[in-house]
Image (cartoon, rainbow, N blue to C red; front, side, top):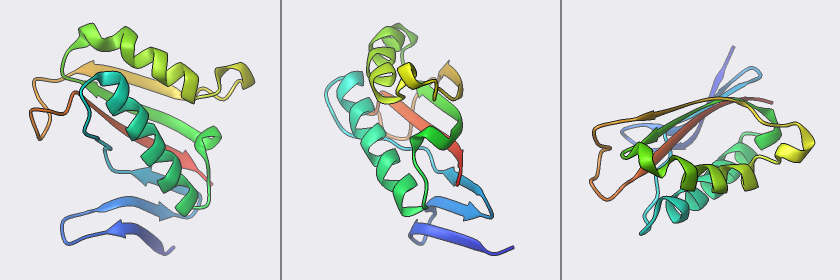
Length: 116
């Protein structure tokens, strides 16, 4: 089985595709709020999934990392608008608080696993 690397750089690939499985690296974004960062992250996820030949309805699982669990409700407002819950396409998910992300200004990071 071959592996396709998407948006590869010397350190990592933003996505990897093998067979029908697509795994995205943790996505982060700049912005002043969790909501603005989350919206940018979800836009990036949409674009990466499209490059891999799939879409968010095929997301199986998401890991969401928050630097402050008190931002959970703010994140969920953006998440619920993005996942198309009204069409039964919500993936499994885990959300956890972490001490910090790679840059102190990042408040949220999202990693997803999807199928084609």
